[in-house]
Length: 197
Image (cartoon, rainbow, N blue to C red; front, side):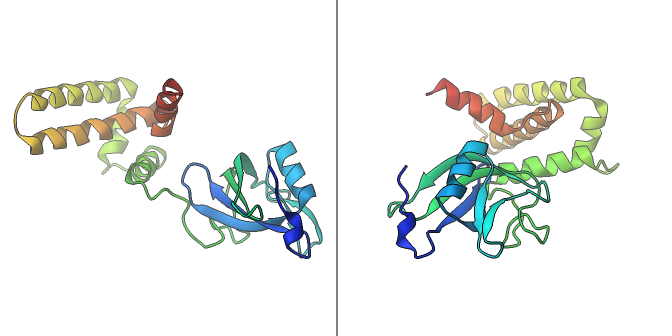
């Protein structure tokens, strides 16, 4: 990887940090060669702080590190894109991003997974999802089985509306089952990706 640190007089290049799961831009910092080397060695994002005039590992005082997953250089070789997993809020204000955005995917399934996780972790008597978690893994698995059978039945008929609604029920209950087992849809997607390498 060739980066042209000499394009700017201070020897620094911008480093854009993006969440590797949600694709949200988390923050922008600057790196010199030493910061890049430390980032690659430690797998934690390290910047050159212009205000402190020294290397600064994100999270060194807060514990909110950025764990490096991938690193790319742009076509002009003067900007770095780092895909990372944040450990806690990224901004010093306590926000998820330095643009005060919530770090969730724009993908509705990710949003739905977040809602399901909230129902699991903060149960309410009014929540159907929370009631399923309270009944345990056997009941959740049974519901997935019931919904799968209903999808098969509707697939054999010609009512597209019923088929799509039963498909939505199946997917919803499957996401609950994944949460109950401690997984997310991304874990299943990774298995599929590994099968097709």
